[in-house]
Structure formats: structure tokens, C-alpha cells
Image (cartoon, rainbow, N blue to C red; front, side, top):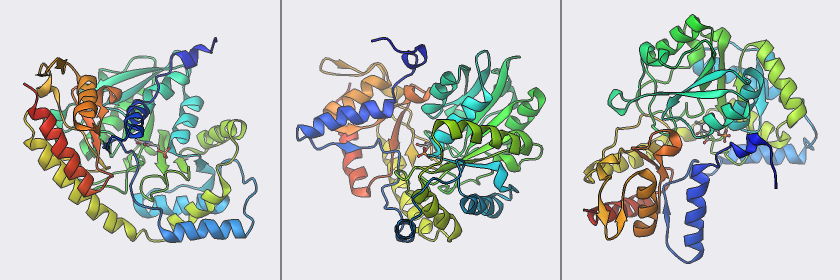
Length: 395
Ligand SMILES: Cc1ncc(COP(=O)(O)O)c(C=O)c1O
């Protein structure tokens, strides 16, 4: 069968590949512990679920305006004001089927063939693929673990050419958990202003910060006009399956993205929109407990990973991922298995320890693997014991 070139060039999600391999083993009765999860393991809070039920009972089951209901946009504008000190009107907001869809709208609206878009490695797996789908070329600028994944103006400038049109920033970061500090954000703003670039600021993990301070890029002086903020209901409200994300941007860009969405998908699910409105209008008191639990798991995970020879891990300040450096294990062997890279280690950990991790090369950082701590502390303890035992067998 022959398919369009854009599909041939697309990489399947690495996370999905690991999940599928694990699912096959599970189907054979093997007890697999997964560190692959990209979603909170909590249930959507009851009052949000109740509001969806009410929406159904009230017959709010029809098309809504393609870019979202007026009342949800107002709730979003209020949130952006309250949490981020940002002033947006309804005509600057587009509500979509998740943050991933919001990002796709941005790429399709802003970029095309001949354009270059800067990504900071380690990056979320979807960015390069979506940039490529738009016809543009992703240009990778590496950030280093030694710098706590922060960045400087000079580092960023290495990726800028006359074709550069935008830069994608993700804070807190998936996969590293790094929260970009004011100096790093200033570097982004300086370079973007000097070269008239769009800033795409993915802040999907904003409410899951345990150290450092989350600063919304659009709130930095001079950044507002050309920054598109991407947000989601998925991570902070444990609503991954509901599929609601949104952008806040200049009105002209919102209008253009609304036009694209209107022809591509129409409105996101009406019931999920009403439930999201409730989620944003109520104080998220449940987050205090979730954060406490994430911190407990994170602290255990980072301490334990750092006790494994050949493995070292920075303390992540946000999201729910650990991103240990595992290149200290490269060249080691167990029987006829040789660990030459992150993919080998991922396979070895699945076969020998029955745990799943995500190889760092999927995020543009092959010296690392990613472990999610959005799983119970008991599972984390057992899984990391198995990780340590499997590493002990290497020599
Ligand atoms: C960095 C980042 N941005 C955006 C998303 C999109 O999430 P959703 O489409 O569920 O809103 C994810 C999900 O894993 C993510 O990790």
C-alpha cells in the first residue's frame, strides 16, 4: 500500500511501543511493573465527574462553537489571570481535544515548508513529529543535565538561522521534570525578540511543581504578543481521557487556529467542556494531597536510583517523571546481552526485571531513560528493587 510521504516520515510513539511490548508479556501472565505512565494514577475528582453527569442530564450534548463554549473560555481567562497574572479575552482562547491537539493547531497554523522550529532536548516526543507534519524542520538545541537542563542565550542562538520561525519551550518538562528559571526564560524571550520568533510555551504540568517557581512565559516582559501558551486539563485534574486542552494567544492567531480546527475536528466534546468549566471554577483543593503524594514517591525514586551503580538522577522539580542518566551502564554485559545504549537497557529491564521504562533517545537524550512516578509507592519500591537487581547482574 502506498501512503502519503508525511505518514512515512512520522515516527510511532516510543512510549506506545514500550507499552505494547509490556502488554504482550502481561498477556502471557508475566507480572510487569510499568514506569511508562504519562498520566496521573488518581481518579478525576468527584465534583468534576458530577458536573459531566449534570451536563448530560441537562442535554448539553450538541455541537458547541468550534473553538469552545463562551463560559469555558471565561473560566480559562479567569484561571490565566488568577494563576499567571495574564490578561486574555475569550477571542484569544481556543479549546481543543487535549493539549496535543492544541499543539497540532499551532504547528499547522504557524509553520510550513522551509521554516525551522527550535526544540530543546530533552523534548517531549510529539514536538518533532508535529513540526514535521507541518512541513517545517525541527532544529534541536541540547540542554545539559550538568546545567540542570537550564539554557542560555548563546546556547539558543546556535539553533537560529534566517529560516527560524519559532521555538517550543516546555516547563515543567516532560521528560526531565526541570522547571525553567527566570534566566532561562529571559534567554528565550531575548532570542525570540531579536529574531522575531513565535514562542510556543507548553505549560501542561504547571500545577505539578514541587520546587522552583513556575513562571508563565507570556508574563515575561515583551513576550506576550508572540507567545502561545498551551495548557491541558489532563495532568492537573487527572482528566487525560476527557480530552480538553487549550491555547491562549494573540486574537489573530486564535482566529486562524479556530478556522483550522473548525474544518478539522469542530468542537471538542461538549460534556468534557462543561466538566472542565467546573474544574477551573472550583478551587483545586485535591491538588495539595496529590502533590504531597508525588513528592513522597519522587523523593523515594530519586534516592533509590542514585544508589544504583552506573545510574545518577537529578531531583526533578515538576511533572511526575524521573530522568536518570544511565550511560554509566553502557558496555556492561549479562551473559550474551550487551548494554550499548538506552534501547538495550530498556529491553534488558523489560526481559530481566519485568519493568518498563521509556528510552531517552525518544526524547533526544539517549544517555537517559524516563521513569514515571505516577504509580503507587509499593509498585515503585518493588520495581526499583528489580531494577537494582538487574543492574547488579551486569558486569
Ligand atoms: C509536555 C506535554 N505536553 C502536552 C501533552 C498533551 O497532553 P494532552 O493531549 O492529554 O492534553 C503531554 C502529554 O503527555 C505532555 O507531556
